[in-house]
Image (cartoon, rainbow, N blue to C red; front, side, top):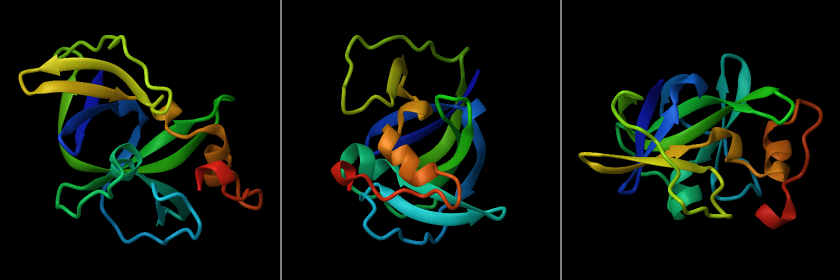
Length: 161
């Protein structure tokens, strides 16, 4: 299995490459009024509007810095029913990959109710790596608001805006 490595602040994360559709440069985004701060905006990808989450904002409360290595990872975000939606994840320092031969992920023994997207961890010569769980990035109300089909958009959930 191959993983895309990226950073948020000083922390490193891995994303299973089977979720990744494409890695694109940071682009200008259309802002979404009244959206939570971690919703960076929307952009058009091959004729479709794709919501983009700023994972730096979501995880550390600060927007991703503007760097040459800041990228948008376009991922398949699966629903419980198996439906997959395109979702953009803005992250820092997308510069490397690793394989399951390089590291072994294992449960950390610690779970964070407010961060269900953090999966198992691994270590290498540079320190710890968290595996990101794409399917757990969005709580159900935000998933409906961001990823519903055209003509079926819902308002932003009050508790998350």
